[in-house]
Length: 130
Image (tube, rainbow, N blue to C red; front, side, top):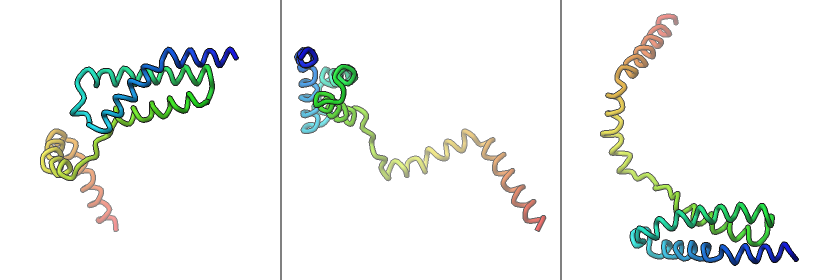
């Protein structure tokens, strides 16, 4: 019974944080990042970190129960929004190919020359030894 009481007080203390995180995530799903204000974006990060901490505490105190599962789902949802990877676009590849790659080659022209010389001399040596 004491464990149940502890869990209820744990939930009561932190539920507002979880609900606020869920509210911001719901808004984000519907409206996107452009419609969130700076305060909400900063709050999203803080609420995420607090919820991750709460998840760790809940697992330690109560094991893998319904609360831990619920918090894990909330944390996973927030993680997906915070650490969203932008898919590379074809135009970005073309830009890299036309400007980024030549700049890298120019920056490391000495190494490119040495590697080309080693490759060419190895090829020539292999051809002559046949």
